[in-house]
Length: 264
Image (tube, rainbow, N blue to C red; front, side, top):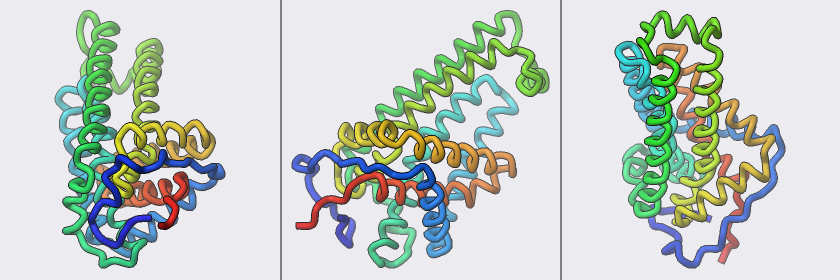
């Protein structure tokens, strides 16, 4: 269990491999309810991170208007950076769990607690991001060999499903990359922050959580995607609220999915 301070629990070399628990398919509803409670309890620090997510969303919109073929890369970047931006939200939930004061300042430097392993995790996700960005551009090049359609023409193709082959390949490959990122990050960052767990064990535990609880993880992914879409469809204003809820809920997902360390 975490200590009521910002010091790591261990040097990470003698920790047991995380034990993943079974959870019911409806567990994500409980996580979201607890996440909402955290937001209500600590609104100012939580909404600060919500505005950070909204800023990232505005950047994607700006790029989409001028070079939408790169939007997939920016959207991937949003999904890849999301768990790192949400570290402060995990810390808010942890501090509330311990009965500590609600404050923004301690959450801004929480990454220092396990910077080495967080860096390894960032490199892994960065490689995935670069591969997907390149794959995305290749797909566009293969299907639009003569001339790229204008923005309205591209959106019309997406909405009308006229270029079905392109849409099938593009979203199919995108789903593969999204699944890899989701599987690797379900509980990995909370584990690294809470226990000073190493990056490899944390990612393997995340994959184990997905494999052991496919129904719950499918529901959880649906809620994450749904709340993200709601945020984008509300001119990014919704992200100010929906992303803090998802971030806080991720901490509670970690608490449910991973067996606590035995008390010493």
